[in-house]
Length: 446
Image (cartoon, rainbow, N blue to C red; front, side):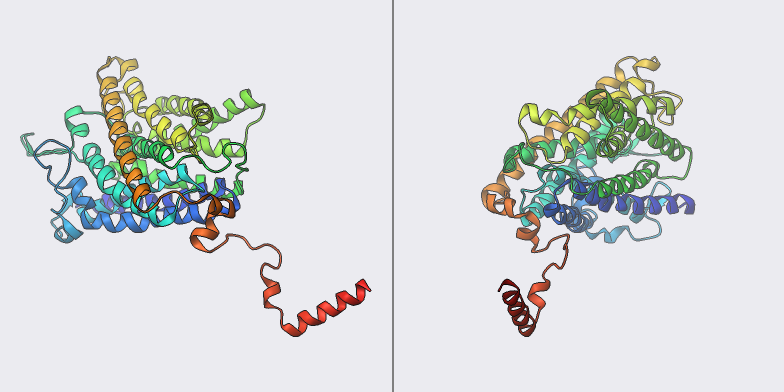
């Protein structure tokens, strides 16, 4: 065990945990005021459900012994409750296995929370929690095994315990979750909006984001936490973490500029919402690539992501699917961009040590990236479609039209985010005061 690496992984886990409240603020600011609490609760609810499932069997399904040597799923009950991993001799690399398990738990929580933005303003809260638990179990945990579970080898290099097929057989590069997190969540979001349908009045009467300051706050927290997300995935406080940190910074900066430039050329002005959205697009795109490209490559990937994702969010109007907060346009498209561009811009000078097409590596890495991306998209989309349909047909996923019009905060949580003026002050007046006020008004009218 290395104490420095352990401290870095634990700190990174805390940074990634902060990303889910950051996402809640980002999504919450983008909806109308009568739906902000529901967006916060969907993220918080994801933390509750997935956090418990991860400890019970999620970690085992993702990182347990591979069933059948096929690279598809870990043994779900091998580390049930994580009880067998608490000893001082239980290590993942140079860090205690509980630290690694905690770090990966934050990825699982965030991935489920990401999906919620696609169905803002029209999903019932209880069924959302059920969907989140089923989706994590049937989709995220297996895909995490495909992408993040690496073969264990002995001193001679022989495989002693096989891992996931994408990480090892296919050898696609996904350093921190372009496929497992963003393409996975984006595909699920697309499936959900197809099952639940469009919001009442969409696209004519959807209003504007009720709080752009909340959006910017959320984007800032996400950017801050993303340094733990990407650099923490090195699982060591060393050069790989440093390169991932720098690449995360510059790719995000370039994506923000690319998005704002696209807005300026298309609409005549750059917007605050566009700048915040560009930040997220850049973070998404550099996630799979941050260990395999140079800082110059990261700038190019970020710039492309900003320029591509800015018009991609408008596809929902052309194709007729109501992705409320652009999960498909940013996370699915951004994840595909970042994953595929590894095959073009990967450089042997970066820690991953792989050359893409533009660095003399030919098409070898590009086809591997494409197969991994398509496989995760197809699996997630089909399973998500089935889970959402099942929840809708059994307990009802979609909120009623009247509830949507009244506001999802009131109907689902019996709360409102803001109380303006005196609020319910009239109900707190005494009968004597109310009667006196009535007589005064009658005298004035006379």
